[in-house]
Length: 575
Ligand code: ADP
Ligand code: MG
Image (tube, rainbow, N blue to C red; front, side):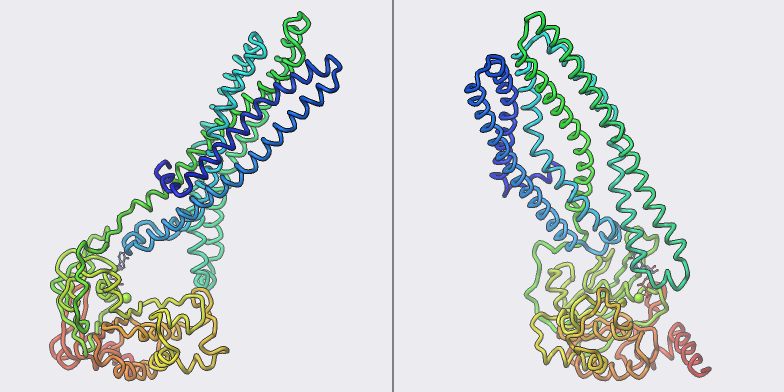
């Protein structure tokens, strides 16, 4: 947590101001009972109205100053805490942006969301508390004891008994509450995870009638969290009355023994009244300290989780000396590349070597799970390889800055993703300075212009969050258009034509060919028809290259390819 507070640097002045105002208020609070005792002794008991007014006026002033100090402290501490929250959230966001896909696989989206929102809020709340209590609790406790002693020494024995009793009660309850609070965060993670899966998978859940099962999964997570809170609240419910009991007994004891001392003439009425208040102040400050002991570990748990994100060193970072000043047309070369996913037993790709040249279409075909997506994901360096090398225009991708590398690539992922915004904005996502003309042209090449024209608003048609209001094939075509406006050296289409009918597929590829004359094009596909006229076809089988060549060559010398072809052709013939 201390580490997180280093981020408070820009707020140093404000923090000092808060501490100052809190101290001011505490000192005022300590002064008030003494003034009250004076009113009783010098005013009321003597029947001196002018003295009452005089001291009363001072009390008003002190109380008023206390109120102002308290307001200022609240305002500033809220400012500091929210400022810290903003800084932390943006730091986490920046960090997460720098993550490679490995870190996402490892941590998971749900927990990253909780950490950015809930955990930061936790820190924010506690920061306000710490700033207000850190100073006031010790001042009130020691000041209170000091003032109480000055009013009447023998009566302080009451406190010597009641404060330890209070401390023991609070310590017992707090120690039971702390572990519960720590678990809360983890359980909120769990709820987020279930909820996210549920919401993104809602169609499947409905279609397979698994609503009941999913409901149960959510309910379990929810009940689990609720149970936790209930336990906390049960302890809380017990805590308040026990504390009040101790405090009331203390008041009673003070009045009892104080009464005896007054009747013996050893103490005056004002001192007793003031003493009672000091006793309360001391105990309240003890409670504040106890609250801090409960809240701080909870925030500590949040801080650990936040630091875990902030301290993660992404697997993939730019090299010290990036060689970015190279030129080329997007020549891609794999040299004996082997790659395995984190924690996987076997490599997903083994000894892959090939070259994809500018002006040529290189197609990759193979059954599902053969490693096609994995292979193309390595080019933008979404993952780092185990051995071998991947060169773009003769430079190892690990020696190019990620930004520069990716600016050369127009990537159409297997799972088309659109963002909320208009169609035009979604296409423009590929290149900030694309003109209206270029956007329209890209849409035409991607065979998207026709369906865009039928939508109301056309290019200004709003895409819903997650792109739910367009079909799978439309989504694919829009993400192809997005890659096209970028005018990159390297095009990667990961199974981007799978949701298109044969006719649109053929039309799109014909239009694309004119557009990508100079570029390196990599097409991943399942259909033989899509890859047939490629300059080079790579046949992948269980992470290995089973054959490479043109359609004709492969028909002659590659069994795996022949199998794929015959299975698809016979399928079509059978229809
Ligand atoms: P294809 O695109 O040819 O269908 P993939 O490249 O997606 O195949 O997957 C190849 C293999 O790698 C599969 O066995 C799959 O289970 C595994 N795999 C894919 N993505 C991941 C990942 N993020 N973590 C671990 N294993 C993965
Ligand atoms: Mg794939």
